[in-house]
Length: 265
Image (cartoon, rainbow, N blue to C red; front, side, top):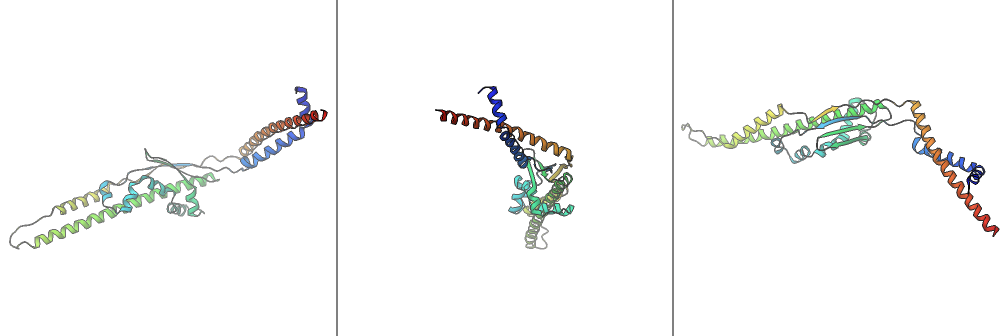
């Protein structure tokens, strides 16, 4: 088939080619370019730090100890319904906590402790506000959890000190009243030192979560940009459809000629 034959075939089957191009353009637009409302995903960054010392951790019940030791568990709280609920209350957002929690996206860097957080929305300002509300609620939750852990550890140390003081009192009550002797207890000194250490640590404790950068609202995509993107998408589909139409036309022409040859034979 020479060039003249190809051009003749295209002229005879132009309707098929144009139809294939139109259908492909419509299909591509419907699947990938029909929406004129993009989703925005601004990012905020937080730093999750080692908040509690081993001394404090040893004084905690197991569930508190496990939470404060496991970095991944602390990160997972970012996507919890509890944090989402606090975020919604802080900004009076019209969302269900479970729905917001599902929209929170988290990227972690275990080595550095940095975590990138984003919440997507078709409104760029709302996306930024939701993201910032989530990280603020998370930082507050982490600080409250750390304070609760410290209070628990201090209460446990105070209880140990009280028990040691009772032992010392019992030992000394058994001594003759006029002996002038006094018995101490090593555990009392240890408990007192531990309580002092925990109390000082509570006063100098660093925040377990630091908001490094807040999310900023992205520049909204203009209506003109949206139309241009749709036209580009349609053009890609049209070109692909026309190419497919040409291939189909060539195939049909080949089959038609093959049938004609068989009939002639």
